[in-house]
Image (cartoon, rainbow, N blue to C red):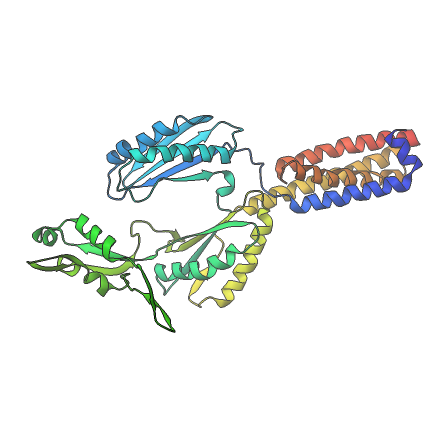
Amino acid sequence: MNLSELSLRRPVLAIVCSIIIIVFGVIGYTFLGVREYPAIDPAVVNVRTSYVGANADIIEEQITEPLEKSINGVQGVKNITSSSQQGSSAITVEFELGVDLEEAANDVRDKVSQAVGNLPQDIDAPPIVTKADADSDPIIFIPLQSEKKGLMQLTDFAENVIQERLQTIPGVSSVSVFGKRYSMRLWIDPGKLNSYRLTFLDIQNALSKENVELPGGKVRGNETQLIVKTYGKLTTEEDFNNLILREDSSGVVRLKDVGNAELGQENEEQSARKNNAASVFLAVVAQPGSNQIAIADEVYKRLDQIKKDMPADMTMMVGYDRSQFVRKAVSEVKETLAIAIGLVVLIIFLFFREWTIAFRPLIDIPVSLIGAFFIMYISGFSINVLTLLAIVLATGLVVDDGIVVTENIF
């Protein structure tokens, strides 16, 4: 007894099986990610190293080249590109298609760890190894502007209010803030520094020794116990200006003797603008395999809630939304699918001249296509333009089989 004969002899069983297929298909559909194109990008790993004060030649010779020589030993590498500039080194490692990104990142991380001993000892931090893929690109950019407040105040509001609320959206990987942050800037007069026979390294060493907060321990009594807290961090301009650089028989040299400290912007060399106005930008990054359209809808809802609590002089909008392209592409494919189903019903009616037979594909198509979503889910696919186009093509196969069965019945 084959499947067709079993379905004819046991119609209740056939109906139950169809319902089960639809239920599993709906479950799979709810867990499928939505994106424009499938994730077929090759594995790419970035290695970044910061060495403030070093020129491009030193970066190339002492950092980039040793790291490249070590990374060359990793299997599956397609090509390596590097960039050495003032104060930083960037290396991009692209692997062959099919290489697992996690394994590639671990291999590069191991090679970088082996090469750390060949790098300058006074680099700012060990090289940072990060994974790069198409899902790491932001899907939404949000500019924040104000006519009265400065960029540092806008950045503070973006980090403490907007960023915290958007990060809790399901499916969001991270929310980055591009703005101006508060920083204590030290302005040094080279002439005065030379007159006291000091160098910039002396200032750096003094900051490393004095600008620290060490544990104070405990003071115990017979019946009490007190926690001792030391206040060693420099927080105000006055604290930094009174920093002791040198103390000997000739006297005490403080920072204010060779320069001054002032609270300002962390980076004055970069800025972002929207409509020719200085702005602070927030970038929303989605998790791999998440539903970008659902994330975008929730971002819009939360932005409307945040706008109610914002100061009147602040303005916030969505400057770029990549989900709009995904939404439009998916919508057009769904429209094509609906047109295809309608044409199928019409053509069947023209041949059989009976609406009962013509509407039978409306039962076959949903069972087959909705059930396919569960297979897509367990196979690791996503809802994108290509998979939806494949479903449109599969509609013809389903209808063709349905017509053959109908002809055999009648």
